[in-house]
Length: 312
Ligand code: C5P
Picture (cartoon, helix red, strand yellow):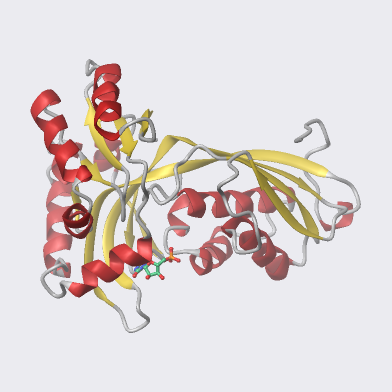
């Protein structure tokens, strides 16, 4: 069981003492995701606008005194072995800084897995951030970003607390102008996922099978994004796009069927996030979340995940 109340802070000279700290690991949404082609290293280049949500996991850490890293989780289906990104992040942080020899993580899992909501990546960055905080910022943002991208393509974005543009395979992050942020931050969304997840490698492989038609030319993606940014009257809804919907919706018919139903019953414009299977839609302040949630649960059954959240 997790116990609180031990002293915070510390660094190498304090490693014989125990330190505890906790952090929220938020979920993300890809509001715009254009996959532009396959690279020599096997990854795909993309142009994506990504935002974090005010909804996520909580990661707790008790560090110091121990040798080796351990992870436990309130969700028994999560693999907590050394392949887990939280433990890989801690090992990478120790190797890069020489700080901390081990500790215990406890993860309160709320972000569904196999969803395209970045849960595992966010947990990894939360571990890096916690360890850096306990080490008096031993690593600067650039060094943290370097570690983050080695852990996963979706990790660097979680080092930023506003919506950003992500390019390359996810390692190149750029800010958005204030006029664009103002149209995204605070927007209310419904996020929903069927009982099944989609594996990211599967989704990219399936996309690649239809190449080049499945790839968005870089110039098209960039000009579409630039046009939305430049038109300061264009609402967030006009930004929405995801190249990965076509392969996912082609195989998992439950996704397009419910998207069409939510469009006709509530006038919503749902999109998939990342490689799926989670989808989301903007909700007006007056929109009836409970009624939308009831339709989703009726269509996808008790295993469906549904939550209301806001873009931060
Ligand atoms: O970077 P990450 O480990 O999350 O990627 C998982 C898999 O998804 C990669 O092995 C690759 O197959 C695919 N991927 C990709 N292009 C990206 C991100 C992921 O092809 N930009």
